[in-house]
Image (tube, rainbow, N blue to C red; front, side):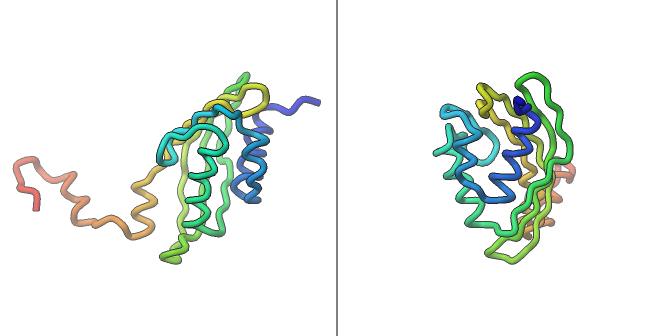
Length: 144
């Protein structure tokens, strides 16, 4: 029985993020895979693992749940929920992100992530609410 791209995507999130199985990256990612949206654009398993290691160094209790998933042919897209504890601050974070991917030969060839970094920063108290208010003030008011 052939594994569907839906099952491969579910396996990616379960094995890589929930089970912290680093070997799953090589199993499920094409050597030339381009990954966007997690910071720097990276290529392939070795590039992804550098970003991944920064996540697991900054957060523990990481759990990712797929909220929505659409698969057609070799393409997938959806939303997932990232929940974790930030190690430095001890704060719990919980946010939804969007993803899309394209598989080739049963491995990820292209991945795009859209992450709400503003929500993440707000949950970690890294935003100054009074500065954020400047976005919504009239243009004739001076910036403080």
